[in-house]
Image 1 (cartoon, rainbow over the protein chains, first blue to last red):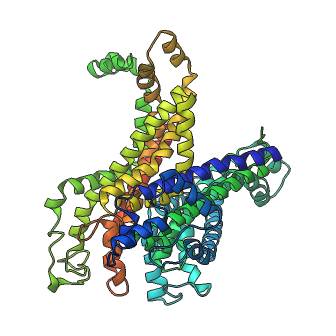
Image 2: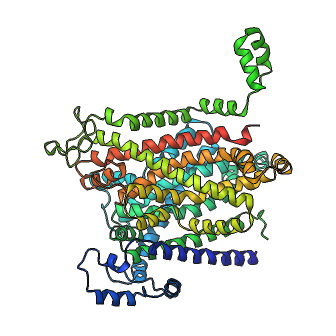
Image 3: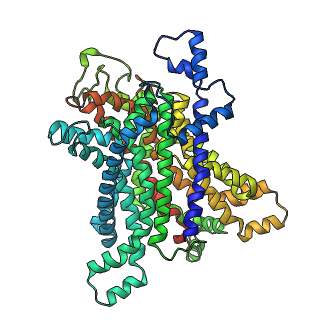
Length: 308
Length: 303
């Protein structure tokens, strides 16, 4: 087991290196000179100053040396400097990270509670109206654009009813609307998978045995079927975290929530490449690690899975 | 053989009665029958058909010019003369939605085509030939999969610059890994099948085996994935336009219409509401059809 964990952890390293190469190359593919992009909305400095800046930014080095310098920087927490704010990219990301983590975590809870409940109810009442209604709702859920759902929730609960503040992040009340928006969207996927997985579990012999023992139905469903049905759900929850992270990009900017997502959208609009590069790299790394953890959790939850 | 029985049954009633008792339904017939029996899938199909008609005949259906600004008609709520109201420039929202159907469907179809064609080619080559090709392409795909959903498309569009065509390319590239993995898995499982082995033994060339024996048999999951993929591509494309990286104003694209409507949410709710409904309706149609196709094509239920 330990060997497997170590092996999987080691396998992540080439992926992360690949990600860093991809992000590095991507930014180099942007048409135009980085220094000119940097001064896109300002007065262009003198050619001497441009040459000086190019040297400072290491743009006069051979490409592989630029990459190594960049990689060395990343490993030391140096993601470069934002074109827009002239602040270190890493610092800005770290300052905003807690907000995004809070939002992702809160929406994950919303997604799991709603998704698993709906999925279990649907499976237990398979073919009944409640199953049909909740599964149709789930299809509608995956069809709704998140940014629109966010605006509609904002219109109803903030503008019309005035229950929650329209935007910002200073109190927990600011978290409610964006967390529900993101959570509702992912709950649809979780509900569908929980239902399928529960149906599978309810047909197993151990459930028949549990029923034959005369256990109450709720115990059969919750203790015997659900526990086993949760194994594939854990993996999809791992994947959903990635979805939530990237969903947060748009939802954060809808609610003007000061997280990494809204930072990225602002950076995109301003063509602030060091910032975009830093955020993309950072989020991809977090995503890879979360997936690794979900994968390993799968093994702990299901002892039938053998590792070699 | 089956076709012969069918022709007989349509030509002669007596023979037909005899034949129908022994009629064997082909796989295609079973799939079609199951799809048509699925009411939700049919609803999805009709939604798509409806949207295709709107997209094709939009300019003739739309009551007004989608770009024509009538400042005296600014911010009019839904009424008989403007069913969905007018926006900040007095443009008719219904007309803009009708014109936008074409753009949204294009984003869905073009980006899924890019993803499916490239992904399929990579998956076929990598699964069939294995070895170095497989190793290298799978590592590249590993890296692509390290970017969650929207992030890859966002990064690509950041490089290419904001435009609707770039959105299609970005969303398309972003979906390559899913198709590549799917087809690779299919190829690996089909490669061991007896009919492929016998084709190999009879000296068929690799291309023949890939295109005649392997590809047609791995199409059904691809079709399901593509149908569901169109829905998510349309939503991703609209999200990119919403943050200003896709279609640029004054183009009547649903995502960017929504984006310009958000500033007027407080009083003129209809500007942002209807484009969102149109997007949800479209994605709903493709999701319903995709779900129905998945059930109809499920090989476990076919035998």
